Image (cartoon, rainbow, N blue to C red):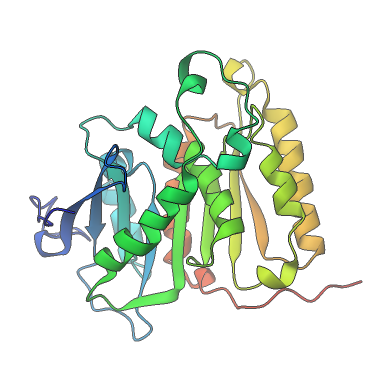
Length: 286
């Protein structure tokens, strides 16, 4: 890992200032993927319990889309530390790297690979999660007062898939925000793993799945009805088990527009009082 650097300020009147925004480079263990991680710390004193913190995948695109209005809204709550985990590219998305990093190995072996994006190497979520939790997070949180009960993870599309897989596989985060997870081409098998969980192992976590009800004629979303049905069934089963899981609907939004809408909602949620979820499964009424 190289040394971290403080880039130019986005504006001293903002939630982020020069002194509180830094970039750090990281490399994958095999040296084939190269990351750029932005850490933005509020220019306010941390609460006694520590700052909330949200790790956000596709960090290049996230940093491009943070705006004054959102930052002002966050400053009126308990503003979180924002950790945007991206790649060393000038593009908003590194398609090959994210296809590998964000997809689970078990489901990747079952997918039907053809041309285009489905021919990219996949199945590296375990390796990426280890990098995120053992190298990236300790580095960016060093010296910060962090509220571990308000540590969250957000991702969209393949990133949403990674969040679901992480909810199943890791207890490092408390809140898991899965936006429009890519559940086609065999990845919907992940939902079977979700519904099979033993609730006591997941009582300290909160899962939010976010999906848009695409407008009519959006050909990309022809499978959306089936996916939404599976998601609703999954969440019903989890709630019946007492697990803290919710569905957030975004009417008339398709897959692409869900990126902005969902990351804004995740940031606002983790900065609000409702992000301090009480540990323990809900009591069941039957």
